[in-house]
Image 1 (cartoon, rainbow over the protein chains, first blue to last red):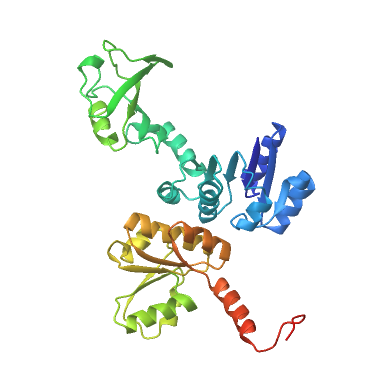
Image 2 (image 1 turned 135 degrees about the vertical axis):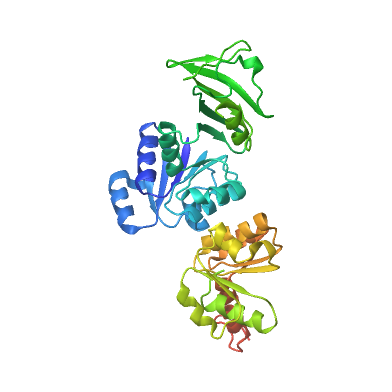
Length: 219
Length: 136
């Protein structure tokens, strides 16, 4: 596989090392000369000096082949959006994955059609929320472009669903319970599964019904 | 968006013609470029939706995006078009290739570099001097 990595900071450099170890062909573009020189000393011709938002530099890096994948992982969200747009829309790169530095910019990536993004901050926050569920609902997975979410809810004593059979629980339109985790073991939900206090319930839902689901399950 | 030399001059020209203009710049000091200014001024970055809202993006008739970053202008310009449905958006982009690329994808772009290249070449072409190596 041929991969083009834009941005040679910690993320870009480490991804490049891993891809090279896996036997893939990689070009890593870095615009800061000091960083580039270190990368070139380590990686040789894999490293390329230049601004990856310049079409001329992308062409030098082989964007026209095109690569199977472009990773836009600079520390600048505007740059990552522009690189991804040029790759996908200008050169028909099949897969462009972009790093989101500031989670507030996620909506710009979504709006401009960059569906595959990675945001370390949101990921970390998700993990923290998972440890300290503030409102009883934790997002496990968000398939934004597909319009589907997977969430986890903790059922406490006195919750609306505690002691009820799944068949008798009324949920908002667009939400389904899929699994109940009890004593560390997850079971798929059946109509006769009884939800007990202390259970962690996993639900699949359409975006926008989180709050209704939360009220229906944890109260 | 962007109240530097270009942005502030455009703002003053349009305001003088009777437009209701709001400027956005990260630097509060940019207000000084506007002289005696009766229009709006919002301090902040155009990537921040809150800033765009306060600047009136939802009700604007036109937007000029001229911050000092090409990529910021490209992203902000597209956000104004697609999120707020502004049909009249023009972005200043210094890199001719990027200006052409995003221009072909529906973002109206102005490239001062391309203008300079064309003008400089035209001036030379229009001089009466004959290029070296051509007859008569």
